[in-house]
Length: 193
Image 1 (tube, rainbow, N blue to C red):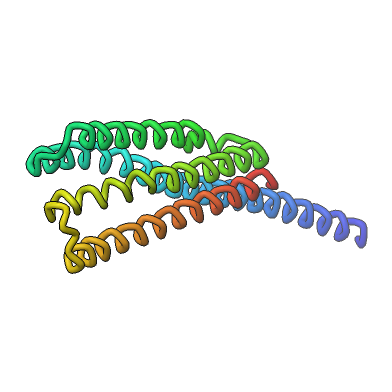
Image 2 (cartoon, rainbow, N blue to C red; image 1 turned 30 degrees about the horizontal axis):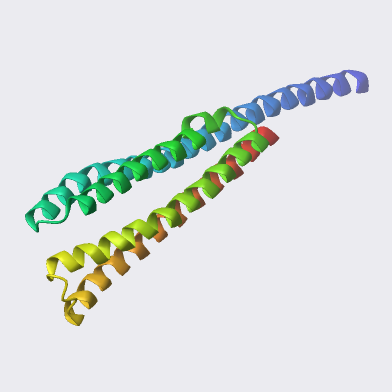
């Protein structure tokens, strides 16, 4: 009798283990799905930021050219602005090619981390290098508007505007970098399972 009970209990324990293993497997699949969905949202944010750089640059270019022509800027300054905007578009395109955000989900943690670090380094360099011609263009543009008198009020007004835009841009860049770091953590979680 005790053997029959023990065999029945053993059978119940086996069935419970099988059910538990199935539940754990379903939970693992659900967790992986949630992590992948979260990664997809973060990658789409990074792509949206990159697209915004292209769109802003492509919208700013005709606007700047029309304003420069309206204020009768010298052709060398117009050429300088065109070259600077072209270089900026090219460098942001190169940064996007370095990152290739859609491929991050399928990569191993070390490869994804290496790619994100290269992107961050390149993007920081692009940001600081492009700040120099942007500052020069800002000063020249203010000069054009004020007929090169550089009134203090005008300089402060436009300076505050540019400072606010610069701060917002650096906040966006840090947010994008934070999203990339979160993606790396999630890739590590996926690969650990």
